[in-house]
Image 1 (cartoon, one colour):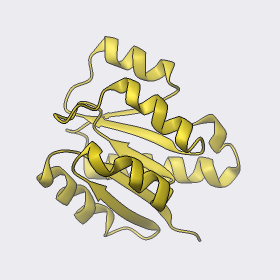
Image 2 (cartoon, rainbow, N blue to C red):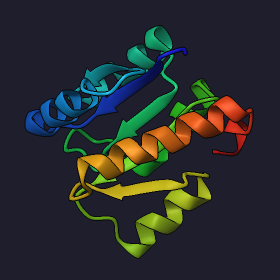
Image 3 (tube, one colour):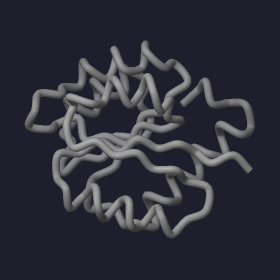
Length: 131
């Protein structure tokens, strides 16, 4: 089975470490991390992730609108938003971009893995263009 490449983007080093630690316990995941938007575009171009696990409310200026540009760079990319709080307005904007997976950071690590496994199953089934 091909490993699913996951680019994790968050400006909190502890969050990055926790996600990496948890996902490294699972088979089939290859992790790349970025603590700022400065390197995200290069990571997307070079790493070509299958999944972008991102906090779109980082301090260095990423806004929801940047996600559209990222999706245009790599149309097969599945975006999973992982944020401390997502209000109704943000959820609406994210859903307009076609983002179907919106998780709060308080989600359990098992729920995060389950979401990634669901994305993996959908991509493997050939219906990945819908996520």
